[in-house]
Amino acid sequence: MRIEAERGDITQQHVDAVVNAANSTLLGGGGVDGAIHRRGGREILEACEQLRAGDYPDGLPVGAAVATTAGRLPARWVIHTVGPVYSPSEDRSHALASCHSAALRVAEELGARSVAFPAISTGVYGYPAEEAAGIAARTVRTADSAVETVRFVLFDEHTRALFAAEIGQG
Ligand code: ADP
Image 1 (tube, rainbow, N blue to C red):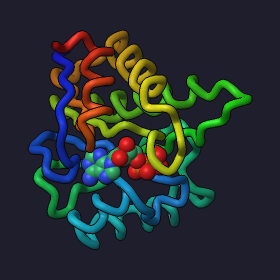
Image 2: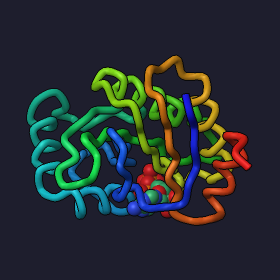
Image 3: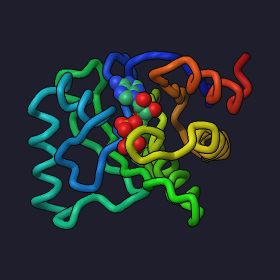
Image 4: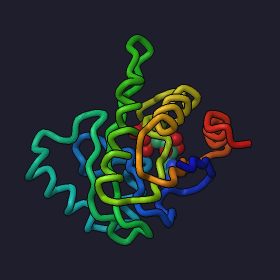
């Protein structure tokens, strides 16, 4: 698997699947979630509403992942996952790792060969970016997955550099 880190906007990635840092309602929010729904259009929200009416009446659990159409985004699918809210007193790294492994599992089931990830949980959910980068990189590196390319897409240079260091990209 090829693993990359680059600065950019996740909604502009030409990949098979983009991962959304969603919240458990699946009905939209701020940050990455807001940007994906805004640019992807109503189709994504409608697909999320169907998931809520079907398999996920109580919402998507933390650490789980589920796919929908990517609507008008230049990708085929959006894979929604719910990161943990950071806690200074409780280790929630397992849940953050699970977001990455579950998203890769869903990607593989779809036949996606390239997947773009944002820095899950490092925005509103408060995870320190360095810690999140380590967990994300380690989980993706050790995943036994048919996905060929994972691209971490980071909004700012500081976060990009942290992810680049964790994946060993100069
Ligand atoms: P969470 O709720 O999981 O913390 P956020 O969406 O609030 O998720 O933030 C996750 C990270 O994504 C933050 O580092 C934020 O700066 C970044 N981010 C926000 N919008 C975008 C975007 N359009 N593309 C890539 N990264 C983004």
